[in-house]
Length: 284
Image 1 (cartoon, rainbow, N blue to C red):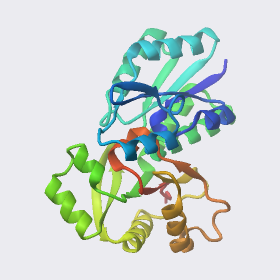
Image 2 (cartoon, rainbow, N blue to C red; image 1 turned 30 degrees about the vertical axis):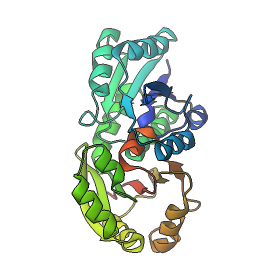
Image 3 (tube, one colour; image 1 turned 135 degrees about the vertical axis):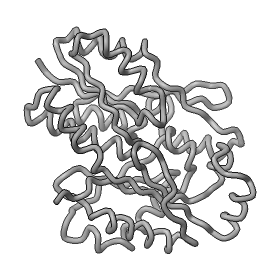
């Protein structure tokens, strides 16, 4: 009996990467002007940001239905496997609840883990799960380990613009205008499953420095565990600048840094020009 690791596209794991890892990524649905796209399947990250930049309409993402979960879980169980599904934070989406409801019909052969995270934070938990599976751990052992370690994941992001938070009604137009005028770069983190503002900086250089300080204050990076960096938009120019500015964090501790693109689930709210880091904090 094998263990099937499943997650959703909010983790920003591409279908190609999923195939390499031997896991399954269920695509969320992104809706632009009434047209539905499957995240990462019929709409790539690049296509998403091209549409986001070109249109005034803010897209939205539909959560995965219990019926979709049932289909995926049934396929795994029918193959004789157990399944561990790692969900987008239950505080950010109702998908986790839908997965729990669907899993209840499979007599304990499907387990749902609330990642208490999103995007690359969720992704790290999936990568850890795949590594545990490859070490031969059972589904129950994997779930226990994920639930024990998820609280040590740190996700920090520097946003390039306030425009999309304004469009989504997260901040007022006045605050957004003042922020853009003063080149305010908000720094956000994921804490207890929710996205929170943890700092502000004027200009991208100060923002990178602030982001680096937050990494240090979080206890540093556990380089024995998965870690990654990410960017939103059409290129990673800003992220490469951050990597150069924060060389001291990684030099001598890591080889080629893993980088991924932020997709539509978070990209809808942060827009282009964001950079982010995710890592497991060092444990004493």
